[in-house]
Image 1 (tube, rainbow, N blue to C red):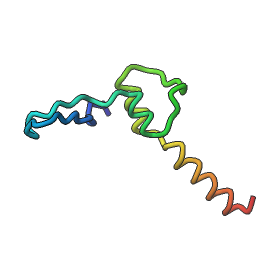
Image 2: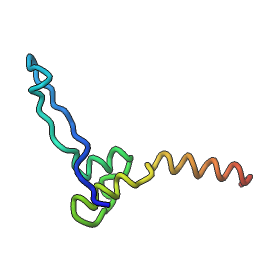
Image 3: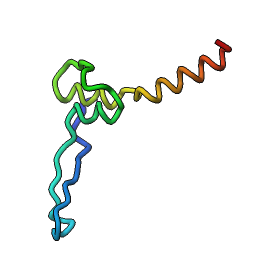
Length: 76
């Protein structure tokens, strides 16, 4: 499946009607940051591929929580 731009940041400006707001697409690095992936983590591929990887990632804090739950369930 192809990935296309689907997330954007809105930059509101004072005294501007909502219809005139400016926006830009979220960069792959911003999408990775939203998943709590550190900036020094290397992601390969072009921008579309990096965005897809960020979208398919499990955030670091969720992965840690899941690991702790499994450890507790196993009595480790």
